[in-house]
Image 1 (cartoon, rainbow, N blue to C red):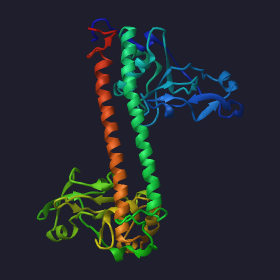
Image 2 (tube, rainbow, N blue to C red; image 1 turned 120 degrees about the vertical axis):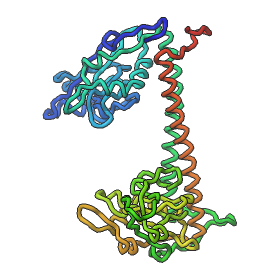
Image 3 (cartoon, rainbow, N blue to C red; image 1 turned 90 degrees about the vertical axis):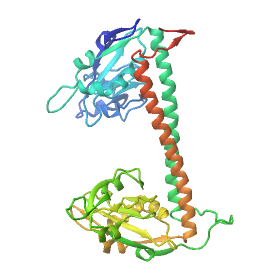
Image 4 (cartoon, rainbow, N blue to C red; image 1 turned 120 degrees about the horizontal axis):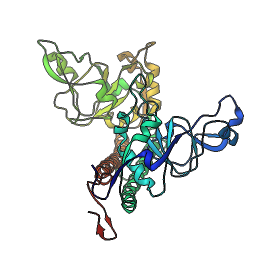
Length: 415
């Protein structure tokens, strides 16, 4: 159903739909030219301004590839993962491979309105795919997609409103990326001693950092408690491998697994504030020693199997500083060198006990951790703002693009 003054149509009726092609890879004369060539991997809800590969005029002429104009809407008809059904808009003249459907609208249809509409219909379009071993869209399916047709002035106004939201989202994404890059640079400088901060008296920290074995500054605890529920044991909430792998802070907001444990295990393996937990075994080398900080009282949550607790001695080592140090790629690789195993890599207590690090005094550790924590808070605030903008735009799209909510044109509301 569409509102009064709108019509219902199909992509085929409002546009020309075609696809591209791939020049022969065996002919070097067809490649590394000047004509942009889009693959489905580049069709990711954005305006395409450049491509990773380019073809030559000869490659274009001797294949089914075509040159499409600026403002062509591209849709990925097949591809891995989430690719199928994603759309993009050409900001340049470009050719495409055969897995992209190219939608060139007829005159009288606003490209940004229909681009936004197809973005909003991503999940529905994916459901239209052919069934079978490999679910794909086809040119026929793309042509059959139903679309609303508001009056052109209304199409333009809706597109303009949604474009304003896109600009705000893009600006926030850039701010977030900048903050993340700045934090990465800060970590590299502060956690290696290349940059020294000011102490509480306003004097820059000085003196040499000292090399310490981890076990001199912290207690290493490896938990045997797994996710089984055993009769006769006490019910507990269990901090599992995935809780650490997907979160750099362990808080009460997580949905901990239900399990059981012996009273002695509960006493020994209950997590405390400022504990740093690391993953101690994995089939993937890069997943060894993923760290997370217990940043608040978890009210009795027990550490699970596949994890190790690093419990700092408060007078010597800051848990928050340690969590940042452990999150550096260099430290993660160092822990991997201490792991053993051929197909499944594991860190034993003995392996962890061998770890040693060059560290500043506790006062400087705490200052460094405070600066990086502030950077994290800024990143978190920007991420929250970005998520909110995206959710608000999504809700607005559902209303404007379907006519459930009408826009005003020249001070006169479209009813």
